[in-house]
Image 1: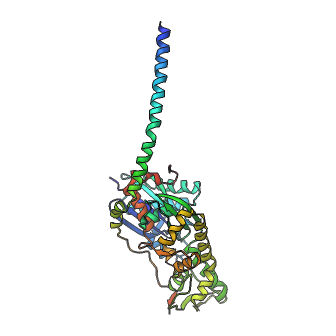
Image 2: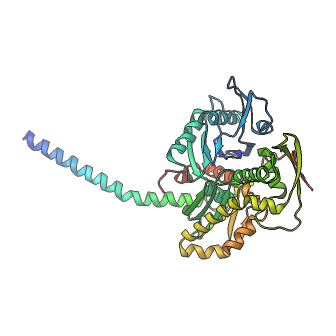
Image 3: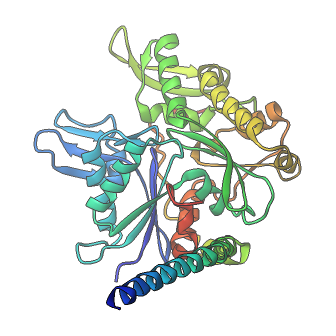
Length: 71
Length: 334
């Protein structure tokens, strides 16, 4: 009797594991799509406008005048 | 709470973008050290002014060459000082995105991320310079169209075709505006017999350098040290001479652009004829370069509105949208 219960439990565990794996596989493509969509949305001109608006260039890198006279 | 940072760790200049604030630092990638004690004496602009003008015990160096770290320890110290200057301390460890040339090796990648982590970053990720440049130059890379960006930096020149947020074709050469300076230095030494420094060569390039003949060309008076007598000497240099001196470097950059064009899928190629290619990076400011590329490729070339800041602005945008754009990091799943 106990042996049948153990076998039943093991079978049940295997079935549950297979179902969980299958569910995970089925879920992955929509996640990929959503992630790609988020990436594309974040690259849109509207999303980038905020960063461009923060365009406050610091002082330009130096360029002295020693040694050369542009004549 | 640390504000996350984007760093354009260039061979010539280092720019830092702080999340929510914009560009907070733009300095030459130079560090001045005491040779005997190893103590850092200056970084950035102050160290740049010392190049070629230091007494024997001081050395002012650029720790990056060709976009790669040539001295790991010095680079780490430079990054640490830069981070300190923008408010990073041992208690505020930000996430950092660093722009690097796309052609760097695995070892070089590790060197950059390790240097940033050891300098105080909680996490360091890398993004390819042309991708960051395309984002920063406001190209419509979210659309299924061909966007071409040419990024000419101090030590590398990279051309990339980008569509739908990914790199479709890429061509990189370890040649940049420092090679133009070196070519001018060699020419003046060989043809005029005078030695000039790195900074003077750069100034000649800015004053009269060009990749194609341009209107209103002037001569430049160049002062250096006569190699025969050892005395100071002045010579006149013409734009034709400078073009001749730098021809090899310029043609190598143009050839890499042509190779990238030839790698692009035909569907995207036709877009370039309408949309053109975008030039970014300090090297792109060389007079006549856009015209020269346009003449040799028969594709219109446009200069970005923010040629010097495009890369860091692009990386800054990635920091602003970190979760959505983390798939764009080098080595991340595309």
